[in-house]
Image 1 (spheres, rainbow, N blue to C red):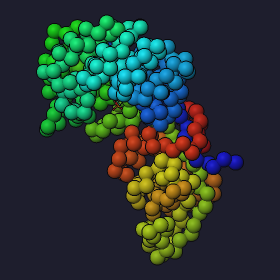
Image 2: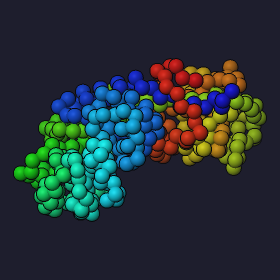
Image 3: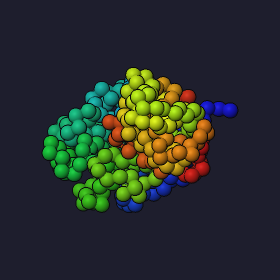
Length: 369
Ligand SMILES: *Cc1c(COP(=O)(O)O)cnc(C)c1O
């Protein structure tokens, strides 16, 4: 028997969430973002779940090539572009679109003979200050890129710092859109602005965010980018259910403690269940007492410190729990955002950190375990 811990990937929910993204941005084409192993879901499953996307966007050049091997024939976009001049021929050979965010990357394209034209996304830094040309340098970068014979379509791109918070006190989306518009003034080409947060606010921002491409990531995996509203509020479904079983039960008396550091002390007689899942599986070690978990369909909470291969949960609300009782760590019935918030992080980090040793299968919601 394998260890009972398992991540079930819900391809039907991935399709549903992509349809939600399209409904939010009906005029736009959609890049489904599958970086970081499709946010921990597996690259091939990302490809299957988002087969109806207009393209797949990611960071890792080797995974772009892998997508071609897996048979993906629609566009692919490298969100950070290439890392070395030796990558340029790959773009032409495998028809991969590249982001261009700095002069070094323009030079790499200038110095390498392209035997087939490529499409690029030119990135503007509208206030995020990670990648891209500043609005006042942008037209010059565009002209230099335009002069390269192998470069075909140039799409204008920027990335929002605070799309989850419409009225951010330091930098609003509207201000970033204003800078973007000023920077691209008079330049031909399609436009790509919104990540999930931008997509989820398209209804509110429709006028400002009219653009040709959107780049949703986290929303396609049933998570939210933050900002207070839940995945359920946005009509998004969980795409990953992490489930396991109780492998031991301990009867505690008043004064008994649990686990490393003896952080939890029972105030009276109680039962705790030991769950086959720990931080070496990707469960957050910092999940404090009270982090939600579901046992046999009943919500309860983590007690004591999460250890490498195990964690302990309060069985008080589930008096009939036994060895073999089903446990949901996140996903179906327990939004990953809730577990993340309790642990002081975001759903993105939990999904991406799913460890290689966790068994993964595919199934609809309600079919895992
Ligand atoms: C990761 C990424 C996205 C997707 O972001 P989400 O918040 O997951 O929707 C979009 N655009 C770029 C450039 C990215 O790197």
